[in-house]
Amino acid sequence: MLAATKLTYSHEPALAPGEHVIGAFTGDAAGPTLIVVGGLHGNEPAGVEALFRVSAELAELKGPLRGRAYFLAGNTRALLKGARFIDRDLNRHWTSDNLAAVGTPSLLWRSEGRELTELDRLLDGILITARSEVYVLDLHSTSAAGAAFATVGDTLRNRRFAQKFPVTILLGIEEQLDGTMLEYLNNLGAVTLGFEGGQHESPLTVENHVSLVWQALVNAGILSAEDAPDLGEHRPQLSPGPHVSRIVEIRYREPITADDEFQMEPGIYNFDPITEGQVMARNRRGPIIARESGMVLMPLYQKLGDDGFFIGRRVAPVWLWLSRTLREWKIPRLMHWLPGVTRDLAEYETLIVNTRVARIFPLQVFHLLGYRKRRWNGAKLVVSRRRHDTDSPFGPQPNFG
Image: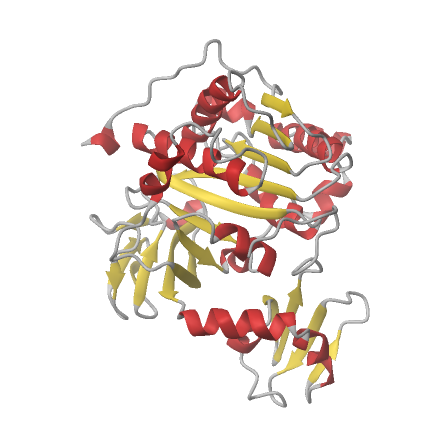
């Protein structure tokens, strides 16, 4: 079985600790910028391997680049050890407190603090020199086998970019996770897309990442379709097939800790249908059952991690159309005038919803308008919306049609 085959690496020697740049390519400096990061988790080497392969081919292309491309390795110290992380999960480390402490002893004493400091300074240098749209891809893999899929923070700009790829798209995962790199960069105004390419050590996962990166270079407007090698083969490489939903909303996350002794039930794979009440996993307290019907996503079959599994449901196209239309009409700007809804005076894009008053405005309505749940505070629901839903802070945007 291909998924069980170990990777063989094309790059020697391996990256050194703190050596994040795999490849940097500049054509028209006024064009769009694509940043691709692999290996934010050190036990997910497929993205790094894919970036070495694409870098080698991109360096040999004759056609001009219409922008800039940067390929980066994420957690270099953990990658060298084949460990998910050394001290803390780097992809939960991009919090406001940590970013305010970049470069300080309080952060640098941790391995992931050093990685965060190095990456943040590198990314800052790229972002401040951007003269057109900025796109960021984050390449990941999973412990269980299953179809590849993309994860997207729900802005219209993110959606439009993601829908140019022939992959299943997950909306709302950022609502379940705190401190991710893409959430941080999305809030700075970049168009972001996460990608789960397959099982960690499968060569097929590398091929999926390679296909995604070549398509991203074209979809971002950096490379013409004629100049991208084997582009016609890359699109079907990522196709989810006729029985997998195109767009899925994350509905539930099963959080776990190291003390839980969490164990998934065997034989559960990405996108498998599940029913409410089904036994999904077990921990030291007993069985864990599905809280609702839908499909399972990213079941955990490894020792490290704090996400046991997710549950998602298909999003009907009519809801996507309605969501886009309401946002383009700027309806979200009027929500704070509704009964029971007030604006947080400290954060302009954050609303506080008194659910005892605003009973007809459930969380799903706010999702429709681009708001994400931040927290519950008694009967009050706190939701926030990104500033860059429809407009880029970096400059001219491509025409997505």
